[in-house]
Length: 403
Length: 237
Ligand SMILES: Nc1ncnc2c1ncn2[C@@H]1O[C@H](COP(=O)(O)OP(=O)(O)O)[C@@H](O)[C@H]1O
Ligand SMILES: [Mg+2]
Image (cartoon, rainbow over the protein chains, first blue to last red):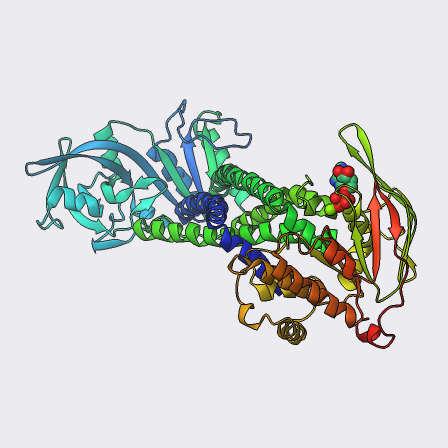
């Protein structure tokens, strides 16, 4: 039988049994769409996180207080150090040959007042270097000034949301605000895109690190960012830094150093696993669709027993009969998959349109896997009924007696 | 052309074995016109199905056009059916979703023939059987007589050497029944070998050679006849 004839023969059947056809198409389409949607979302989330975290640059180390035995997995994000990392530590690190820049970081929530308004805001104590490391863009005014780390200059750079929250339509640049009992002058406003390392700086305030120490009444740094001098090998820089800290902290190794790669690697693994997991769950719905197709093909075979007998009498071989039923199921699966793919990607695109932060990811492997599973299930599940039809003895089938 | 030697077939009906064919010997020459009569359950259909390669015997041998058929596998038997044998059934067995024309075309489609090659063949047979005005109709829009004509057109579209009709007039009134028989006889006149199973003595008597069956045996054979005329026999292969 020619392929074109086969397709047309099947099409006649499928069009005649519209409800049946529609149901199987729907089942297939839902399965494929679910796989694409869920893996698309997972993949989108993964890329989103990677984008966020890779802003750091691979020549940057993050130091946090406390020592955790890291044997794979996620490095400790909250450290309870035995000893604080102090500003003096930061200054000493800056003098290391293999270190180019050091940006200390203190983070906390503090009540901020402007006129009658008051908000609890994310308050970040750091230095001018931090702006360069994180490539923060100042939309208006200037970044934190380059001053000695110990100087608690009363200046602040605020995020765009903070500006709206605190000042509304009033002019913010040059205005004064109060954090706790200390006054700061607004010298800069960040560009909208203020998110980094999970801190949404557009909702925050940046002040000199020494000022933050006073507000939060602490000596210890929350984090220290270290940029390695170009040309210095990372392992050696790590050793230098650890050795210096050990020496400064009375022989104890009580800080943890993380590279971006380690951080990213851990996140990447987890998110990829997650994506695969939800994809697999969605693939089960494809299996359900496959079982539906099997049932439908079984019904089709028993309803068409006489037809099978006739086709055999007219010279259809067992192979042709099997081909008829399998290609019918395949045709259903293919059309259903295409519908599902269009729907799935349509929904993803729609999601991207509503939430632009979410990347729109068309992952070829997910599409391939979904189509592959759809077609394979159709093949596998139609095989049994189709073979039953192929085996029917012609006489019995003609009398409607074969089973 | 056809030779059956000691052909037997036993069916299991419940726990009762039924000898549908009991050591049947039969030789049929190309171009012959045979009728098969006998009481219900005497094995007429089984004989026809055996000759038509729709059924397999338990024992005995079957030669078609000089070749032993028992040795063939199902694939080869299907190919033989497609090429050499046309069937006409009492119940027509048309596919309801296909038009008359598409039903007639089916054996060519199954044989994998190209559409351009099929079209003139179908056109020709439709014209010859006077079905022009009905070609695009679905079977349910046709009368019984018209349906059987479509079934006959389908049976002979591959120009088979052998036409097997199992009670072809069983569902028809006497007028359309006579028309169908006339059509079958016309095809026989052009050379096709024709076997008709019938209950109707008037139809059975028309055949040049008449078989009578009972309990799976051929109890009466009016004898091999001289087939019509030697040259028209070859109009069909
Ligand atoms: N598929 C079958 N299963 C069991 N018995 C059958 C089957 N087909 C035919 N028979 C039996 O074989 C005998 C001959 O049947 P058949 O050839 O159809 O007779 P006829 O066509 O002369 O009426 C009958 O007794 C019938 O019951
Ligand atoms: Mg019968």
